[in-house]
Length: 221
Length: 218
Image 1 (cartoon, chains in turn red, blue):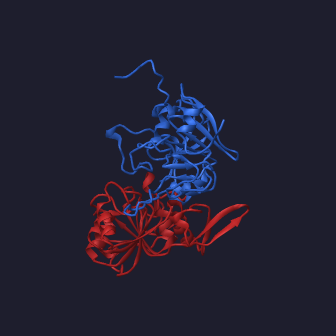
Image 2: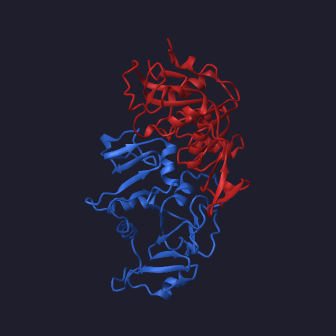
């Protein structure tokens, strides 16, 4: 019997290694898998490369991981916010590397990795600082920039419900990066509010099919 | 003391927002950028069905909820609580940006630091060496919508024109702006240059030209 559910958050993140590339879902705090992040902080992996839209808000979730100094590099679109103080301090001290990418390029680079695409030409960013040094091409009269996929060792995402085959549904705008990060990582770990029996999720409404998900863990006992 | 006999010669921010709303027809798919552009929603008449898109993953965005109805999983691109209208939909980020990049939005309304006479847009970064850069969806919005509207003050707090021959701030997009709404005028970006569609009441063309860092076509 295939059972992707894990009985504890600790076990679900136990093999995340030093230097791993870890995608973390969420847009601000909506969809932030804070229970998995707390388990990762306790687990102790260091020198991580993190992929997230932001660079932490407030004191919890990704901000707490940054504060614990576990992150060597962050790939994101919008690090600076009113409550991104932990990122700001590390950045100003030169203790974290930032790869800034336009938000749609970030999403498509993640999707491309999950879809087996080796790169894509996008009009976004053409003629700007964020396209400097990148290959460009004129296609049907429009300028495009070549962008590379972003692969990850692990993805930590938050969903509303999941089953033992890894099928997931999300809640409202907390869906954001979850479906594409699940596709792009070797090991996608979903924290869910509820683990449900096979068949309880409507097959017409499953957002992330279980093929993209390796581990499902309940966010609170 | 205010001199009430003197014409204001400036649109207020609410008047600018109302003016932008006039140009958004029923059935339009629209993204209102963070900040001043969000005011436009207040001037879309209730009977006009307009689909508001928020790049974090919703179409059919409704107004802010009552405080007791706020839901941390239902937010807009500015991370503020919002509601979903009946018939609205949620989707993931790659789909959301496909809507933008793929030309499916009819209109997006953005704020700006500068717009050039060719429609180049600068609105994400001041270029200051000590600034922490953050771009978000600005570059995707700038190049993706069928029509890109900018709403902004005509001049900076220190009196410099925000409409320029060439942007001095780092660009967000090249030749992407179609129309500019300011407190002084509504301008179209055309292959022949910036044309004046409307001016604030009481303002003369010469006064407008004097406040503008690019040549206007009358």
